[in-house]
Amino acid sequence: MGKIFDLDSPIMRVMNRIADLLILNMITLICCIPIITIGAALTAMHSVLLKMVRNKDSYIVRSYFQSFKRNFKQATILWLIFMAVFLFIAYDLYLILYSGMQFPRIVVWLLLFVAAALIIIMVYTFALEARFVNTVRGTFNNAVILMIAAFPRSLGILALTVLPLVLLYFSGTILQLFPILIMFGISAPAYGCAALYSPVFLKLEPKEEEEITPDDQWTVEEVPEEAQQSAEQESAGTVSEESAAASETPEEDTAAGAENEN
Image (cartoon, rainbow, N blue to C red; front, side, top):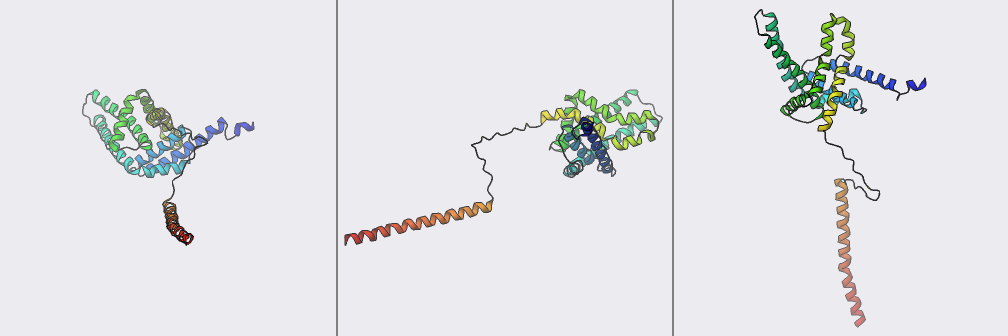
């Protein structure tokens, strides 16, 4: 019975993971409140989730805000681009549904297709921003390439991302799912997305090669500049003393030879 509640037991690992997702979801929601910071908040969330999926221990709050601060500028630019496109699509859908004008049904499906593709690209974009260093254009282009190259995984990412919205739509009222959404509405689906794109990222990351040093091989650490200067001064003093001693030796030998001749 005691082994069940050990820190390394499967049950405790699951409980710890649930607690981590709860904390991460709350932090992300708070950081998304200013609207303009949503990009940096999602990037920081994906940074933490990628470590969680790969079982790399880290302090959630500290790792989150380190990534938030590091990627704030570029993630904000990316988010403003996505927000502008989403608003444009939402406005078009609003006109089609509530303006009273007749539009071909293909237009509605086309807008929905673009919105779905944009959701997938957005997930990839902020995940790439959290893991790799690149320009805004390069990050966006890589996200589009990954969406196409890993298309089955992209469909899974889309399904997980829109799952909370689908549940809200079919639940009838937001009050039934509001507590669950507050606790896990963002981090839990994103955790599943991280599990899907992590193997793809591993193929893009450089392999870490471990250098094996033999027992008889010593590793020399870099010497500080002050130590190098003092060592050079000491070596220069030693050389000057040896030169002075060498110059004095012939004179002594010459004097000794003169005395012997006398």
